[in-house]
Image (tube, rainbow, N blue to C red; front, side):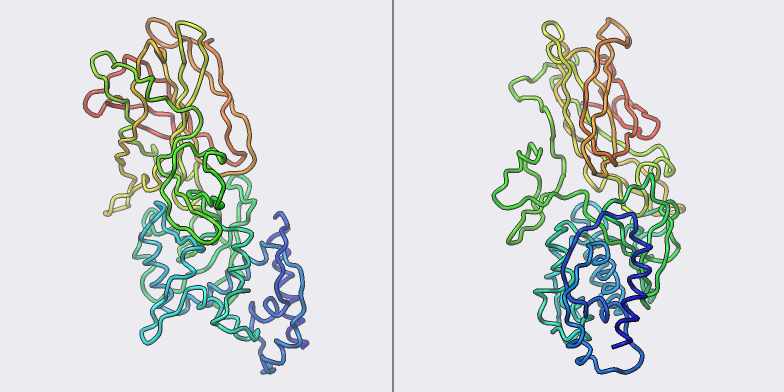
Length: 439
């Protein structure tokens, strides 16, 4: 019994240091899980006896629970079959990034040759010393965490990054497992913590990716978990997104080309600019450099979740007012070439914006880019130049748009009605993002 107690003390000592800045959220599960599921005793005490003697309920915050899950994952990925399973799921890029939505993946089968076992059962199997059956996952760490964090995701962010690529996860190297706290802000955090295959604590820099393969436990930023019976519109989702998974509690909806805020009505279609009635289209976009990309999003969080807000003037000849629409950029838009240093390459978006009628929507629109990271709502003011015959002028007014506290503004560009839209169209540069508009 002394072994279990000392293990708990050691484990909680460093967990307390790791998560002293996190917001505490309580999850109840057995002391046996923490005492024996995290580290194994070395004195040969009977596992069943320890499980019975330590079956006392305690309250543990969700960040420590995530670390317990990280330890379970780190033990599981010692098996190449599990590593192959994770890689195959991640490379599907269902949400545009290299990751596994755990609510969906937990029921998928891992092929061990002579047997096939659900991913959750594989993880739960590492709790055998607790007296839990590997076939009973009702109170597994993963199931309990998903009650509080339904968007919990296991990602392999370096698969798509720079010189690493998918081959980085091949071979016999067992990846580390890193935890992203719920209150993570890439602008304030410098270091993240996790565990290696032996359960030892490891540290990684937020700014510099490690040279060892890593898996990351975090919350998915590309998907909404919409509770059954809750209208998507009430959550700010104007158009229905693609459903990637459903369970008994949630529909998991992908934020793929979803419109937010005020969208142009189909009854307000403009004419042309001046000889083309087609929609303006966001044709292509990329970051101006890899350095600019990493200023917008840490490697830890994978590909950036980009959005663009288009500010326009409604009814410029009458009671004019500024309005906006917002577009979510498809998660797969950041790409690298396959040779040399895997530099960023241009990605075709072909994202429909609006048919621009100058009489209805004025001479100017502003494209304001930002990277979505979540947090509390904050107000951000964006100005739009006054309409004049040629060129921009200040003074038309401002509009407040709602961002999240952790979001990263990525610059803005003013677009005039007269800019060319044939061929590849006109290039604009915010200093962080460069993009092309055409028709």
